[in-house]
Each structure stands twice: as structure tokens, then as C-alpha cells.
Length: 254
Image: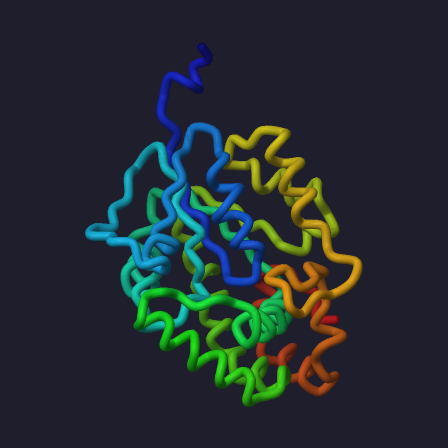
């Protein structure tokens, strides 16, 4: 037995957004990490399971996905996102931040939460989801993107802050998962023990669709799809809003 297997692995915290392949990570990837047991409090709360106490262990767990895009004042936000996005919490912890171009996040969220995403059995969450769906269906994709941009700016700013306070951290990008696989897989494996078979399965499951399917949870998967969905004027306005995000995380404005 190697020395690595004699000692428990330090717990890891996986932060991301809705519409950033978080469903795949919740239901497959994080369940197949060597030496770490997956704990998904968000899924348990969202599905209506009784979660009497949320606690975090120093070793042996991988917690997540912790989606910063969760609607405020909902059980998942109040019980999970709020406490885990404080600078004092992340100190001495290992974190992975999985991000995506905010313009693509907005477009994907519009189609998902407005038309295809299911509803939680938890009444308080379901009410928020239904209000969101009604709002989206009453507005254009451009109006929704501009309205929702400020919330996303705050979420990215929070990641930038957490990254600075974490003991160990890595930022991995959705765009690299699609178009620069070696960079993505190297970042993913920096703090996680993942077998080649799991890595290969992630690759297969994340290839973009040849033809867009607006009725599917996995609508397209392509990077930069916002260019075909938003008007030039909206993109220009978003580029101004997201200027600091582009600088902090290395995104191209064009």
C-alpha cells in the first residue's frame, strides 16, 4: 500500500454555476473521485430531503456542487451558499472553481429556467422557480440577460474573493472543457484523484451537440453560443458590465 493511501485526503469544495455542466458533476463526476466521498447538500435540500444539520469535515469529503447562482432567500442559498461563501470559511480549505463565460451562462439560463428546467418539490423553492419562469417568458432573451447581469457580476466577484482566501485553489473553465481538453483535465485533476475511465466519460458526455435542441436540458453545449442569440447592442452592453470579470478570469471580449 502506498503512503498516499495510508492517510485520508483533505476535503475539497467544488464551486460553480447553474448551466456550467453542474448537473453532470453532481450526478457523475463528484461521485467518482478517488479517496473522497461526495456530499451534495444542495441536491438533498432541493429534493425535499430532511437535512437537519449541515456540517463539513476536514478530511475525506468532496462538497458540491455549490452553485453561486442559486436564487437568494431560498433554502439552498441560506443554508449552503451563504455560509460557504464567506472568506473565513474558505481559509485553510481546498477549492475548485468551475466557471463559464457569463454571456453564455445568461443565455443558457434563459432557455433552461424559462422553458425546460423542472420544479422543486419544496414549496418555497418551487414558488421562486415559477416566478422566474413567468418573468423569463414575459421578456426577451436580451432583456433577461441585461436584467440578470448584475447578479452574475456579484457571483463572479465572490469567486475572485474566495480564490484569494482559499488555502489551495484552481479555476477551471467550461470553454477549456469544450475546446482545450488537456488544459481542462489537468486543472480538474490538480486536487482530485480521477481515473482515466472517468476522465474519458466526462469527455464523451460534454461534446457539444451538432444541432441545438431547445427542449433539452443539454441544449447545445457549445462555447460562445451567445453570439448567435443576443443582439450586437446587448453584447456590447454586457461587455461593458463584465469588463472586470473578463480581466480577472481571462475571458475574451469578442
